[in-house]
Amino acid sequence: MSKTIRVLVAKPGLDGHDRGAKMIARSLRDAGMEVIYTGLRQSPEQIVAAAIQEDVDVIGMSILSGAHNHLFPKVINLLKEQNAEDILVIGGGVIPEEDIPKLKEMGVKAIFTPGTQTKDTVEFIKNNVKK
Image 1 (cartoon, rainbow, N blue to C red):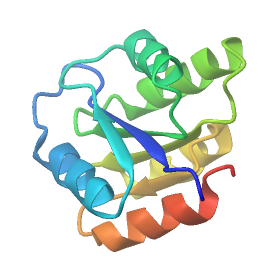
Image 2: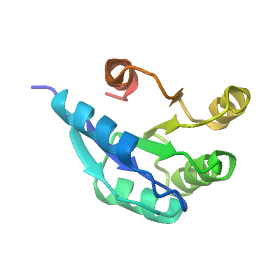
Image 3: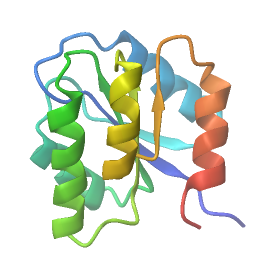
Image 4: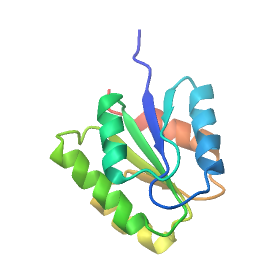
C-alpha cells in the first residue's frame, strides 16, 4: 500500500487573504492527500516546526503580500538547519513572473500563480514528492 502524501498548507506573514489556500487545501484533500492547514499569519519558524512535527512531505505556502522573496528563502534555510530538506516546498499566490526563477534557484520547486488549475498542483505534488 502506498503512503498517503501529507501536505502542510501555510499562509505566512501578514497576509490575511486565505481563500486560495483553503481552495487548494480542499483540492489536495479531495485528491486523497492528508492536509494540515496552519491558518493565517504564520511565521517561517512556525511553518517549519509544524511541518517537522506533522511529518509532512510537502509545504505549500500561499503568499499575496509581496513578501515572497523574504519568506520562501527563510523557510528553505530553516528546513536546511533542521536537516529536513527532503520536504518539497511549493508556493502559490500573486508572485511576479520575474521573481519565479530566483525563487526556484533558492529551492522552491514550483510556483502556481492565479489561474492555475488545481489538478496541475495535485499532479505536480504526486510526481515530485520524495517516495
